[in-house]
Picture 1: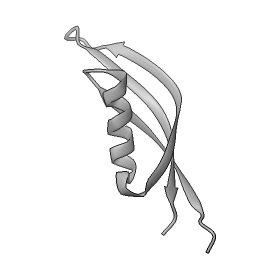
Picture 2: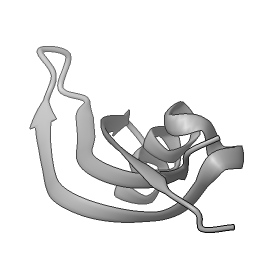
Picture 3: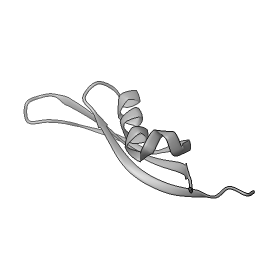
Length: 65
């Protein structure tokens, strides 16, 4: 049987690292059904409190069940 995939584009955010932001995005997409992911954009900002925030836009390929 042929598989099909659904794209999910999600922005993951972390105050720790870009890697954690990616993990947060993949987890939000439904980690069990994610077969692959692609990082589309990375960016960051400094909050009014002076904290660094890392943001990544991730496209996830999820198995269509």
